Amino acid sequence: MALIGRTMAATLAALALAGAAGQPAQAYWRATGSGTGTVSTAAAAANVLTLVLTATGSGHTVKASGKAGSGSPYQATITVYLCKSSPCNAANAAATLTTTQSGGNYSVTSGNLNSWATVYGQANQLQNSGWRDYATAPAPISNP
Amino acid sequence: MRKYAIAAGLAAVAAVGILGGRQLALAGSDNSVPGHAFTLSGSVGGLVPGIRTPLRLTVANPDSQPIRLTSATVTAGPVGSACPAGLLTITSFSGTPETIVAGRGQTVIELTVTLSAQAPDACKKVSFPLTYAGKAEQWH
Image (cartoon, rainbow over all chains, first blue to last red; front, top):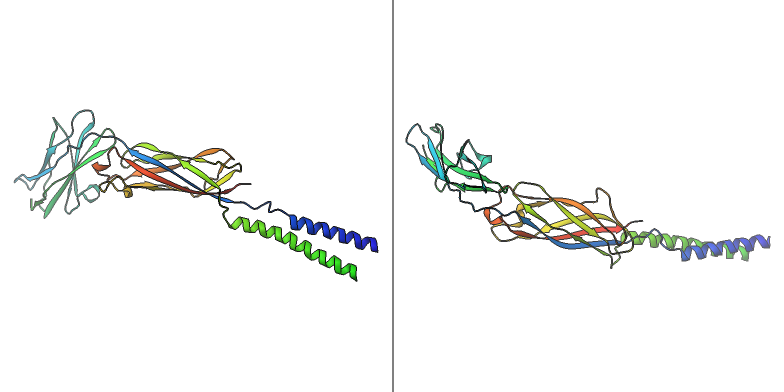
């Protein structure tokens, strides 16, 4: 009986030591990270695009014209958005005209805009770099 | 009777000791231990409006223990009032896919950065400064 008692006591003592000395083996730490970098945009040719809207006085049409980029940096297509309200852009366009530049100039005429109270315009031209140039007509046309 | 008292006392000590070890382990899982840090680095160029571009970040772990990356975020600074940082959209990393960085090792994660399609001319050929922040935990 005494032997059993001593054995139990020894076992419990060992357990006590193991528990007390037990290391948090599954404990883990956390770390924070930091650093810096940059994001650079591509180079591009100058934006030379302009847009002027003119009432033609014929058939309630509007002429969109201006200067455009020519040569290797630029694509030839010019897209002109016509809108009934400002700001004028692709999302707000009520009519879209396309043409190509020639010698650094372009001109394109709309269809009949008789029902429009005001005509706003935006032209854009894509560069081969991926940049798109924009030009907004400085003044809208009223009652074309 | 005395033997039983001793046994009970030792049992109590054992229980306290074992539970104490577990408590230490749990406490360790809830708190960051200062002094553990890792680095994030990487840059990208040639960004044009409206095009998603990969931003590859190198995660370097100087510690001898492996880590599991749990988050990584990027903050862009402006290059001028005419080209604000808000024109950039940059994704973040939230722990998926699981990314383990070996002790004293490094790995690469991929985010994406997009410049607004409406970016003005002032954003041509400029460089936005980026600040990276991340979190990780020791990996067993």
